[in-house]
Length: 85
Image (cartoon, rainbow, N blue to C red):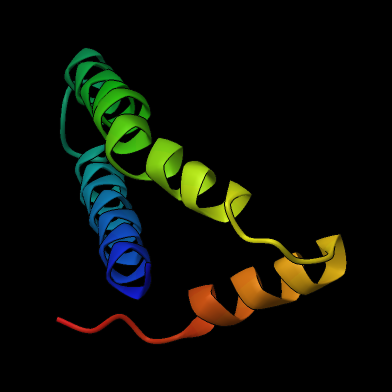
């Protein structure tokens, strides 16, 4: 599960970098082109990311037999760990 979380965090960092790049371009490129790029980024995120990471993570978390508070604390601690390459 730790490997999955590390990969998930890297995917979040990747989309953040794409959005930062797009933000920098917005001042110099045609709005329609930026809009299309944003649509591409979001579509990929919602489809590929959700299927590759979020659905699997939800299944793994559902299998944890823990109290709701313990579950939240455990998840927060796992997500705070630095990603390993």
